[in-house]
Amino acid sequence: MGTEFTEALSRTNFTSFDWVIVVIYLSISVVIGLFVKKYVRNMTTYLGAGRAIGTWLGVATMTGTEMGLITVMYNAQKGFKEGFATFHIALAAMIVTFIVGVTGFIVCRLREMEVLTIPEFYEKRFDRKTRILGGIMLTLGGILNMGLFLKVGSMFIVGITGMSQDSRALPAVMTVLLVLVLIYTVLGGMISVVVTDYIQFVVLSFGMVVTTLICLNKMGWGQIIETVQALKGVSSMDPLAEGGGFGASYVMWMFFTAGLVSCAIWPTAVARALAMESPQAVKRQYMWSSISFMIRFLIPSFWGICAFVFIMTMAPDLKAIFFPADSSVTEVNNLYAMPIFLGRILPAGLIGIITAAMIAAFMSTHDSYLLCWSSVITQDVIAPIMGKEFSTANRIKWTRILIVVIGLYILYWGLVYEGNDDIWDYMSVTGAIYFTGAFSLLVGGLYWKGASSSGAFMALLSGLTAILGLDPVQRLVGLKVVDPETDEIIRQTMTSDQIGLSTVALTVVVFVLGSLIFPDKPKTAQAAAV
Image (cartoon, rainbow, N blue to C red):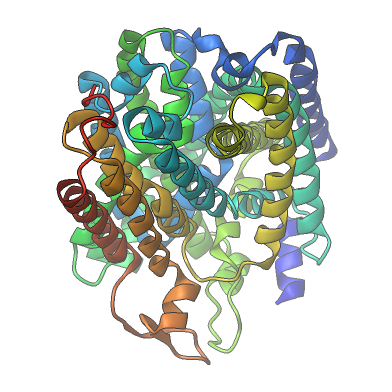
């Protein structure tokens, strides 16, 4: 299989000229980090870009962050496996983000409070211990969530460029990309993130439109639909169809995660709202961003569908390695399908631009996530413990140190983690460790006067049950039983989406009961819901 895969990779259209395009783009990104360093004067500029971002720049930078290479890869994987039924995720993201924009639900109230992080809100509304625990839960879930970003992004580079898939190629690419991200994120903070996100937004928008048109021209809309229907059946068109890869509980989970969580609870998206110039600008940003939230799921899913059709109808060598006829032969990881497909249909020159755009997407997501998790540890765990002794200079220094430490961790985790979760499902589960409890605290703290610090503390801890959705954990505790030879599921008590929805319900119940049974004392009660 190794020989067949290496040969398949080598048939890419990627040339030396394309490498020149990629190197030039990466060099520009590093220069930006060096240039904007002089504008970093305090934590507000380092983390919030001075709270001076306007509507259109806010839309561009939010799109740049949320349309990361990991997003392209996990959506392509879903499209490759499940067909057009995957589009329900894009629909959920658009509808909920637009509603949040119209109403200002959660995000506008946070912006009015002028907090820099979500755990900072926890202290203002509840107490310091809730802020510290919230910071710990956020970083635990968040760092686990991005644990596979580096590996998956590097798989795209290996697949589209045709690098030999030996033991050194993937780790080498992971290391180089990580170093580049660390350099300009450590130096420039949120300012460099916003600037590079804007550049990425422009380049990636052009690249995605052109690539989609080439896909349609290569195979034709009719052939794509007919092939998917013929080979995958009705479940490829209907996410609620019996026997498909989704179902009612999964659709509900997507409206919550891809919809509400992605735009109004997930810290990297909320960070953009907190950096906007006014609450009114936040609403406009979200209403317009609803379109890009839909596109970031829709187009990559379509690329995955096209990759499936291409492999099944036009590339017998790829069909042999992704869908081997011999059941004893291990199939190639389907994450490679989309980048190998693009490597074959895109012409030289354009493929360099697309690859540069995808690396830009990779970098914009990593810089935002690294900055987010490191700043939460600094602002919401270390600073509350240290008190007034923790100066602004020390905060920026520790944030930069933690960016490097987290970067080294995701390099390690990407190399050692073994699980059969789809990447999107892995991210939903790990993120749920944080956002299930955060949902209760944000909604309850902002809109319910009776919410108490004890209820908040208990709800945060309840979010830990979401980890039961991970494939290795499910196997360990017996929620999933698989055939040791074929790795096929024999029995599964609860799916990851069912566990996620149950965890949301649990945190809400615990939060409400905890607040009613252990209300805050009048003399120490925090301000009523703002």
